[in-house]
Length: 88
Image (cartoon, rainbow, N blue to C red):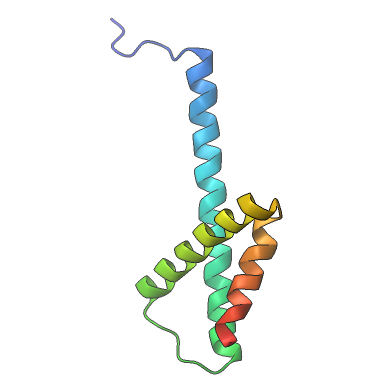
């Protein structure tokens, strides 16, 4: 007796795409987190709590995606620019 029918190929492809996009987004947030922590240390600013830093990194990635949609540029380079602005 089969409880769960096999996924149709299109749905399997879509789920794979969603997983990949989620994975990429998590990697972007990790990169932003490391860049923010580096900027704080470089400027001798005490690091905020990790949960606050993670929220800031997630916002930075969201902003980078928004800017990339407007400019049509690279998200990673925008993340680096936004993280560098912390010293200003």
